[in-house]
Length: 54
Image (cartoon, rainbow, N blue to C red; front, side, top):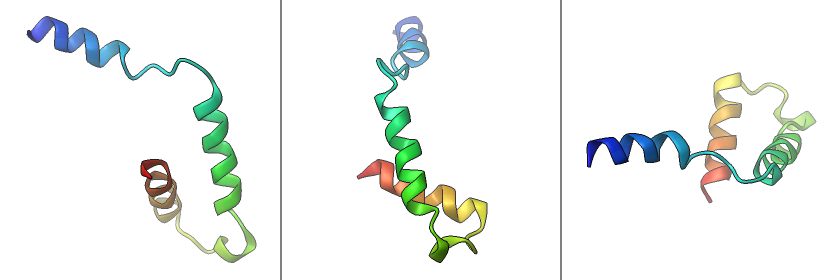
């Protein structure tokens, strides 16, 4: 089903609401504290990715 899989990959990742986006910004605010100001941008992104996974 190559056509169906391309369609699914194109449309299934679309979020149904803005709640996940708002949650991501809220989590970023919790990570971006005075103790983490020296994090490299890549490390900050890695922390956010791990938070979103669990």
